[in-house]
Image (cartoon, rainbow, N blue to C red; front, side):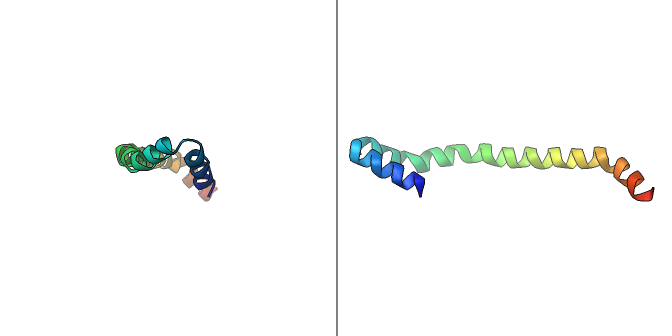
Amino acid sequence: MLTFVLWCILFILCWPLAILALVLYPVVWVILLPFRIIGIAVGGVLALVWSVVTLPFTIVRKLA
């Protein structure tokens, strides 16, 4: 909602820039999408490595 209000203010102040932002937003989103996918994959790999590293401590704690 805040983004929409800011866009409306931009539209009132400088409508060509607001229209340009409206047109370029999907293009920028598509360009940045692979970086988001890589970030999700790296986060998953780091969580897996952390689980493997802490697995022996978890097993020992549950047995004690």
